[in-house]
Length: 307
Image (cartoon, rainbow, N blue to C red; front, side, top):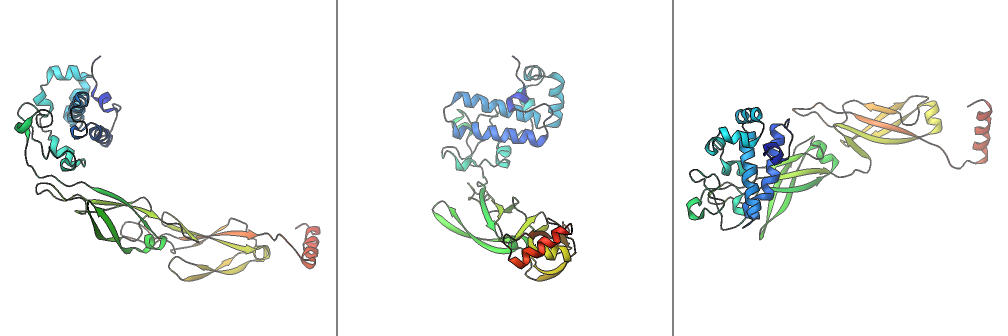
């Protein structure tokens, strides 16, 4: 059966450039020679995914490949030199985050030998060996912050375990950052090899639960309970805001449970790229579980009036 570059990478023919890159990265990490020493099957698969990526990541090559429909037909018209022209395997793997120095110590760098783009990976010996600079590996950590820190920003100090030492890193939390966002600290990853630059540090943000506030995008939510009579007759109540101040609001007569009252501009402050959020007060109505005799009589009288 004729080989298909799309199937080799496990993607559809309508895959975007990002989807192609993501599929290649996943397979390259699994099949990289430093993780499969002496594994001939992994070696062949590694060569195939790189050939597929060399074609499908290049818009012109991909367009020509789509005209022929299979890898076999494509290779009948284009030589290996044509397929890998402009394809720098070292650079691509570094850009995808594969630091050669972090794997087998016998392989600190690779160079493509003439006519063989994989000469320095498999069986190339000293012929394919070079001491090229390599970027250090990126590090990934989770960092938990309070809701107030996510809203107004903060300065934090974290301790990172790097090999046999602990390094303290100062982190500036930008105001308005939301849960799930990542902060990139350039050069705070592992050191480079052979004079290469250090990797980067990526911090994924998690916002800790707050006792009274909740955040949804740039809006802040708080729940407030009122008595039945306050809901019927209307009232004024004091509401804490996320900036520490207190705002008095009016609850209209006849307010229903789950009504939301908006405090415009009291959510997450505006940033360069976002508008200010609002604070919403969600009203709930307390229904008394026990009544004294006087209260019970009043309720019964109200019931007889149709309320």
